[in-house]
Image (cartoon, rainbow, N blue to C red; front, side, top):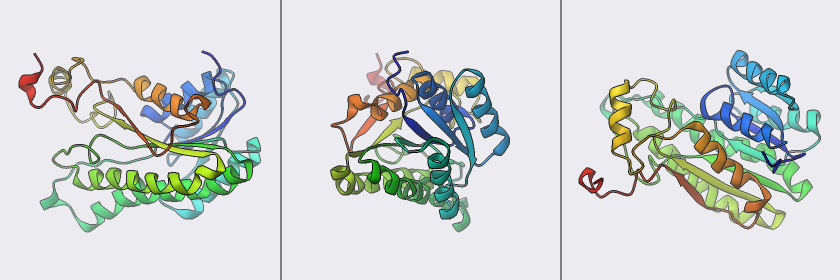
Length: 257
């Protein structure tokens, strides 16, 4: 590792498992101090402890990102523990599968609260400190589902992920003068994320429909996040980076020859 984030303080939401856990590990290996944020206390504390054992400086904050008080407490803890907030990786999200005809208003509202409202609340909570520093890197987790394509059963999720990009583009203009960037990662099929309920046959077939003939790994997303969180991306804001092995490119399955 090159310590591209040496001395930087990174808040990573939804870091108790999956891609968030790998992002935390990747950023820590690059020298960042990590505030692990998760709604599940046991998962989040375990990740923070693992990072500490590996030699990283880390702490844990329990937070439901859909709640204003929790998001504000998260930002306050980062400043109290580490003195600043350099990076916010807004990774927390939910994606329960339900078709529109069976979807309740509660199903819709819960996904919007976590995936869309949670984006607004966490970004807002960190802005004051970042503006004071005249520095910040914000990276949102979105998806190819919603902004680019669709999938049955995820209409609520697709709407939230597309909405987060509209928020991002307007936010980018507002905060650019404070040397704060905001960008988004759009993953395709990634092992363990949203595919947990699928069997190996589905995963294998899904991989064969991707030009690179495989689904992605959490590390593929983490390294993309790392780039946008680093100073190498200092002149990039309001943009999206698709990490999908070419999944969205074929006109049809017949194109994968």
